[in-house]
Image 1: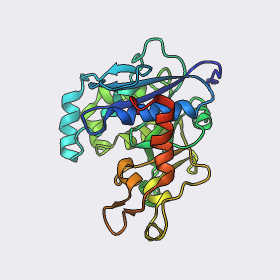
Image 2 (image 1 turned 90 degrees about the horizontal axis):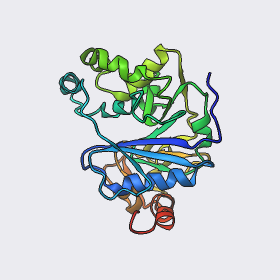
Image 3 (image 1 turned 120 degrees about the horizontal axis):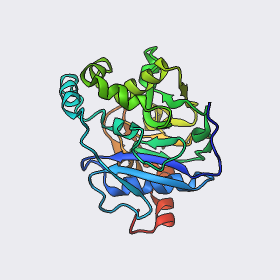
Length: 271
């Protein structure tokens, strides 16, 4: 397997399409990653709305993929419109001068610890955390909020999807994370990110029924906290009462990691 060159900048990518997440989500992710990597970073955001992004973020145009129509048709049947848009990041020549692996993030995550170990884990493999729900059901599917891949080695993620889009999306039941992790397993190049490094806010930090008794806690070795589903970060900072199970008291450590440190790092105009 290819050894990672520790002297080169670390490549970071995210994707923002539509208007659900504002530029502050990208900027705060950029700040959190920059603070928690021991090496310099190149931070890319693929988007059609680059207004308000920090000037050090490299913008990639959100493409209209040649397979857009069959993908949309298959996703409509699966009732998961837009759910596989992230696969555009996997194109081999997306950034012509890019060297080495890419560490990717969804926008509804908060960086809370050092990321070097995740980036350097099992060189040559596609890395994802085991999905919480899929694990409970005895399935191997990875979770897509944090993912590490190398475009020069894993271009099949894009190519295989483009070659037979409707069937691929249908088989994955419209799930990008199912497609990515299972395709990597088929190619014998998959590894799980240790579960204690990537945690779920609702399952690991704020589980029912303790969420009614105490504020959310941050596990000791958590590097990334995923806010998949609800609540999202703005809700959890203030406290949230979405349901009996999804209740949350105000979260001080989230205010610190997601807002206060980003403001100190980037300034109020960008955070």
